[in-house]
Image (cartoon, rainbow, N blue to C red):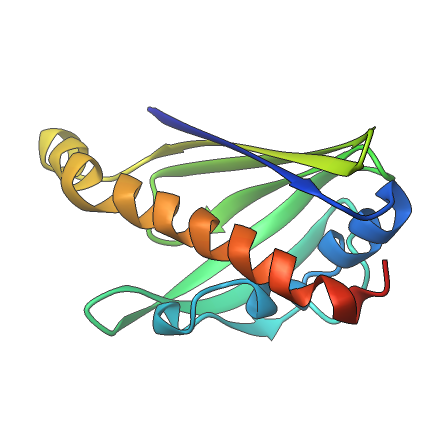
Length: 153
């Protein structure tokens, strides 16, 4: 099992941050284009527990894979959790926390994940997946900061 934890301070109110991040459609906006991320079904409504969202994504070398996640928990303006039901990981559990702080909203992402293929999966994580996940979050941090004027802080 692997763990990735990321934090970002966004200079917007908690309610605006929640409004933006609890809309699954905005995930496409903050995901790098090279990932080929596209929501197929279930992302056109505000998030709720039990919501199933189907995606297509190209995690490597242009290979398209189906990914299905379920929003398992939502506590308005506090946190939500998505879990993979079908996709490239053996296990994927992603917690998104929101906290009002001086200067805006602190967003914390905690992901626990496991890759298939045992030892080979661990090596793939070390040399590729962890770096890719880190680069996705780096991209998101930059994209969100550039996107803020359109969110109407």
